[in-house]
Image 1 (tube, helix red, strand yellow):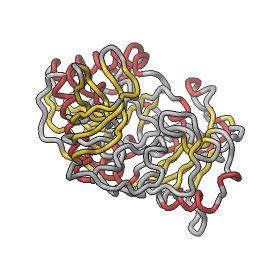
Image 2 (cartoon, one colour):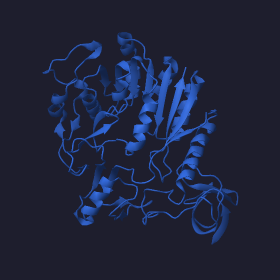
Image 3 (cartoon, rainbow, N blue to C red):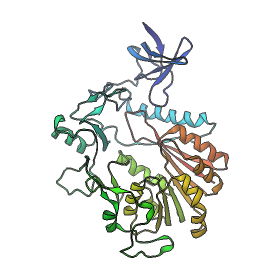
Image 4 (tube, rainbow, N blue to C red):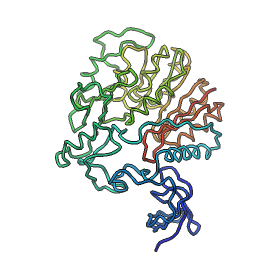
Length: 418
């Protein structure tokens, strides 16, 4: 049985909501303001899910999706909306998240790049992509959102010849450890990793805390024991004149154009003696912070990522901790400050779950004057921002980092001052 409904606002994730018989209804692939004929597909006590049968009154922003696999592939969910209006909707969703926490926000600035051909990082499953809300494998020989390098791979390697299992692929013109004339592509198949000591010996940290020189034969510190690196899955990219090394099986941003626009916003305007890069990953922000501060302290629970961060920070004065933020703030922060002085700024880029409670509480008490907070989850970002503001910080700027056009995924940058 079908129902007539009007799509109201778009919510986090990219679905619109409407009301039917006193219940909230989630409507995929709708646009605010559209009048729709829908069929209820799943009914819960407080809400329903539905699918569109017919668009009775389409939005002026509705366009024809450019990918033949749209709605089948599990990737994009906003291709039916013109790109400019997509950015407006994502900005509104970001604003709503902060407003929900009682935060008065400045005007949101949107940082964006190409709407297609931007994505350099993929996870393929048995040679294809996962279906939307299913375990079905979607076969493809091109993706309009992928970089040329990824699409060259999809075109040249038949589906049946691609590696089985979950395979990470990174392809971009920015890759520098592959010579010109070769495919700028790194494929992470199931290869045995080397012990990190073998690789790391060629990239020893050149300075220790306090500026003390390390001897070449010095072994890597015990806190990195048990970590591994794969030569076969190591990738180097050139970004804004810096070389960054990472493992394609770990995390690295997939929209390098927007990343190059975001880095100056995260690191620019900061300088001083000491800076903390919390949840530093492979040191993407640290390598740029090292030009502005005498010493960079990196904290990252993924010890394999910290090994790459050490490579990326060779020649700079820095210190790294392969620990969770909770452990670092509880057992190390006080000693680090006693030994080297207070932090002049913090850059923090937590996982989707947001800052650990102990990290957020430590920041509230820290008195550090400048905080740049990057997040891949607007709800936890707004939550953490609320606590910082309550402790005396001002939200000076808020950016939508539009890393994933055609999707409902939103990343953001908040600038806090005290």
